[in-house]
Image (cartoon, rainbow, N blue to C red):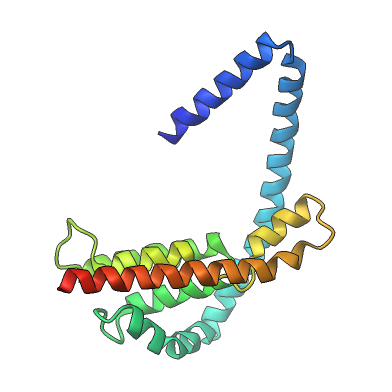
Length: 193
């Protein structure tokens, strides 16, 4: 579906450019945007490689395991149906930690593993379980202590102070996560009644 939308927007842009006599600008914008996209990818690859490597070191050093233990009360509150020592909790904690650090792409592999483990616990394989829905809501709304990707984007585009986004991002993601958790708990309660 998204591919069709992109195709329509590109075709409409080219047609409008042709009819308004702005084809040289359209061509130049396409070339400039392609160059910007490659530069942005290279910047992001460096940032993500560094943080993914740090996450791997943290995992090997036992820091992730220790943080997972510290997060047990939160995980127990959010996911009461998952047994305490189930591997799903480790992957959920790793995903949440990576999201808190603003490492969206580094959070994806543990997020997928968490969903895989949650599916193993799901009694009805055709319908997402409460734990899966709650995890998805928290994953989407996640609290970001350090929005690394946004800081990288701002740095790439010449922001004088790329890190000034930290305060507003923290506030916005705390509110979105709080609303998401309240919604998930209300839906769970409604389902049980």
